[in-house]
Length: 86
Image (cartoon, rainbow, N blue to C red; front, side, top):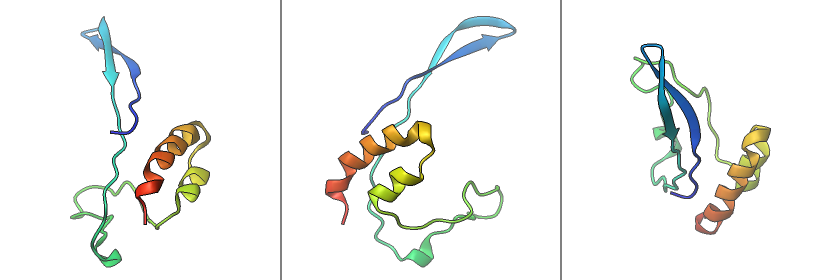
């Protein structure tokens, strides 16, 4: 896990505030060893796909195309991942 972000979220049970829930997310680097044709964004068709298209991008392109509020996180992750990319 490269970076971890904690987002506080109120937990309400039966209309009563019972505390805070923390959400953790992380970024992982995986090496894809298959062929581009094997990437299937549609899955088995039982759920709506989250993405309509994909493409390979350089770390700089990933940061440039990120929404503004996520650019610092993407930059940090790409700085760590870049030495491991071909």
